[in-house]
Image (tube, rainbow, N blue to C red; front, side, top):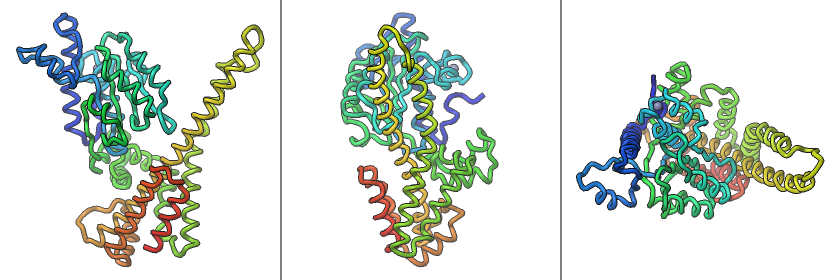
Length: 420
Ligand SMILES: [Zn+2]
């Protein structure tokens, strides 16, 4: 039976560290039960830990109360954080994958594990304060209170400060697991970073991604290898490409762009097509959730209710609906940006193929199905021309990340791709 770390693809070093930490955490609980060393001691106070355990046997040494998982998108940051949370709640302290602690954590229903998945562009301060407050309570299962924050780089400054306070003065049985692309100050504040232990994840090799698609998802080896290469190390994206014909169709449309760039007019047309495809994809992914949330809120507010307190409830309801609409709009914007970013990553892969071919570098192409087209580009443009085009795609991604209007950034990119 695979344990909770089985889905962490190609991350042997990180898994080894997390296993050690889970074992140390279990030792802390055992020592606590025997009333020898009840509290967890963090990295920032490690001098204290040495004082506390002069004999050298310190059960808390391998464990700390705040962690950051970093790595490129698709490397498995949130998979790692959830698996570690399960190992902390595991009754055997190992992450066996079978006990109630492991199963409820992996299923998202453990009472002491809170998962923050921001759907909009940022995580607000009210959400964070409520979370920190609940995380300070005694774990009902007798082990740890675990807070997993996916996309911690989307914390607002105020929310970051609320979190920092909790990390600086941690309740003895609370563990914070943050996920972020990197420890760059743009992603995570220096003060939070200084209080956390960092677990860097790497982009998993295509062979490891293909292996997991075959083993866990029952995908045929041919398709798995193609999807793993095309997804450039992004496990979730590889799975979608292998299973979802719509995702494959969208990818094909993106990879048809280089062929279509025959003039200024065509460049603007290609920009419009790319933006509209991203909008359509985003809309398909959020519309259903929006309608369900609105219906649930209206039911909860008892739409059409009369009697005492009804008018007050209606005044409150208007505010709540407005709040919901704001959240949904933010989520839609995020979904659009994510869809566009995926398209740009595919496009960058094409020009990277052209570049490596022009340089005659002995590496496998990202997109095997457009390799011939990339080869023709390599001949026409040379390495320099291919590099300029690759840089134009990467510049477009950075511009959108820096809040340039997507249409403007994409149009500029298409013109640069056409002109070279
Ligand atoms: Zn277990």
